[in-house]
Image (cartoon, rainbow, N blue to C red; front, side, top):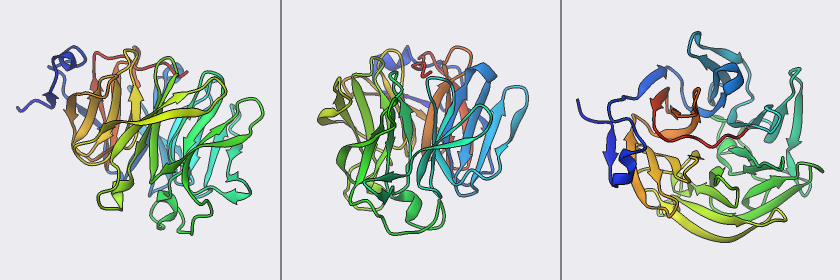
Length: 302
């Protein structure tokens, strides 16, 4: 059997279990996204965007419906209190699910105009919520409701953890997508998947220095994706960046060097670290969800 691992740098060999094979734990979806791990519940949540459904998976119970109407939910994360935070395409908002099930809207407008379609989200240790706002959810009725953008740009935003104030921190992306902080939160990585609809457009990940007052500075191209597009991404405790791509999951060194690939039938939309030791990759890829044991450990957030 051909190996699912493409080793391009010897460092990658220490990050994978060469004998392990990706295991498909769900299929039959249309477009899976938004994997988030709940260690306290031994549970993975993920979305099937076009079918506006959120599913749960557990090692003992398999897959079941968690939310029958997800409002075309895309990216998910958890905040510092363990609450689910979700990007919804149909409402064009970032929302939080309270412990009693109530839904709190964190952001749906900026400067009086509706957001485009929040896509992915991450929470910093100070409680601030950072999200991307491309136009994918309003380009057609497949992943939301078709509409004209009200925002003049496709930006990256920060929601202050104390005041709830929304700030646009980057405004020069074509289509900002997945995002993740470095382990010490001094760097924010943001994918630009603009080549999805524009020829010769960006298909790279940018890196920004996070300032003490919650701004971004010194933006640069961190790495380009050589197959397909970057979408969701995560960071391991050693600083490596694990990103989605057209042919699977790519592992990037902290300096942007491509170390290797986990080849998965895709394209891959997103991924997250989970399992008891945060050393299982859960990967959403088109109609399926996969799990892959690795020797890297995901950053605990929370």
